[in-house]
Length: 215
Image 1 (cartoon, rainbow, N blue to C red):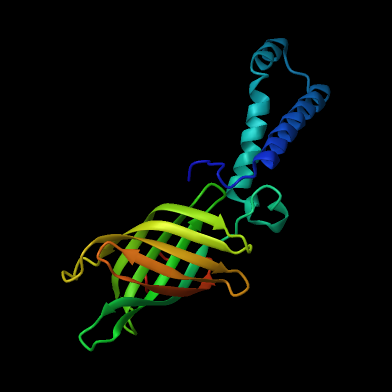
Image 2: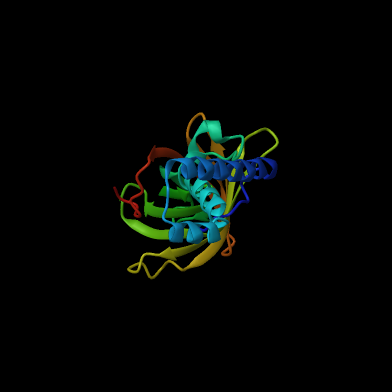
């Protein structure tokens, strides 16, 4: 994902950039005492000197964006939950089947996330069959911290049926989940342009993403 600062706290980000700049100057001075370069190389390094702070800042941001943001001690800079991984559960639709009952499906949600953004992939199967019937991918996503401190995941998705199932049609929709941190669960609702809606509840299974329904 491209570097994006929407989940960074503005004041903390400014402090980080200033701190990284000061660190780069300190490193430059220390290295100047320890390493003696040929005169020709010294001139080149002098011309490129302004790039060094930028390189240090870029490297620090890369580490934070890719790896460090996940740790609790980084909440001063980025306060979002780490949702990475595979979640397994059930979907209950407002659509009724031939028996007059609401349709239920087994559901798997896989999330890929860094400090810049998040992507959600969802896989569905008929109850008990483990045969994938459709999959959906998020198009636009947002994580919001609600007033009570609970985080919500909202996204727009596009759903595509399995190629062998002609009875199902491609459709788009929206979903909103609450993240239940103590249980590592996502619970929420979805709506689609076919005027169907429903609920989904999934629990964290593991960090590994399989990119399909069946394990």
